[in-house]
Length: 307
Image 1 (cartoon, rainbow, N blue to C red):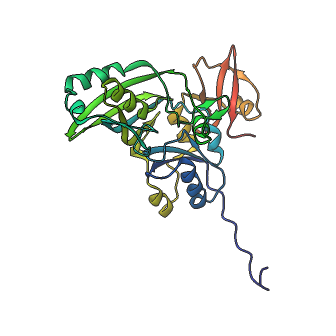
Image 2: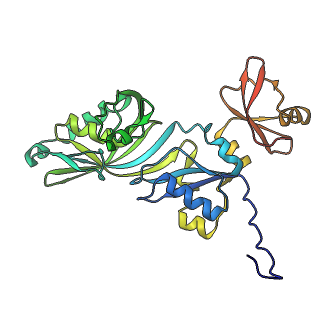
Image 3: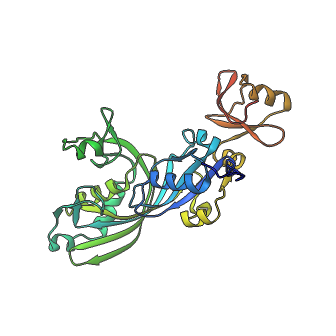
């Protein structure tokens, strides 16, 4: 209850729509990051584009206000990681957070040559069939694999096609019974780097798991635009406003005033001849909608600036 003559607290205005590129810290889930962003951005309308495992750090894309409508349409099918892989030990989760399940004898690890490692990496580069980790978020009959594992179920995930565009070895460190590898991995969406570590170790007869992972790019978004959560809390600003976000992530179509007005009212307009989803911008440079051609007409996929 407010006191007599006490002015009511002013409601904080909603932030402008756009994207925030976060440099996610280790130990937080993507949902943890969203929860914290909601608090310091002053809105409940925050979502993320593609999860990042708790142990991983790096680029996580957040949508704010109307920009949450973009998240399901962003072309984030190419990602780059800096990874540290460990050979000689397998874990339940294929990463350092799991329990050890098999350890190779030191002499087995010592016999792994640099040439064998290079051949193993080459075999995991290009178009491959990959079995995701049993504790991944892949759905099996409508239920997440990790949820089935936690419930004590036996989980068998079929292999699926992924593309590893680049798997470059940067450094090799040999210790007693262990080999650590630093690598750059550029891959398609749906590729599990921890599964690459597991399969590389298995192919070399020693087992393997992922020690550390940092995502440096997601689609067109890079660490250059990313800020830590502490930086964002001190200065809660967008990385890209709505217009800049669409211009960065989609092909651009500029409209005249008459066509722009039709788009604002949700009407179909002549096709642009642009493949896939593209952004439609009015004469003032503001984005109106995401659209896609269907025959001779363009259909608005998401109206971002309605009449």
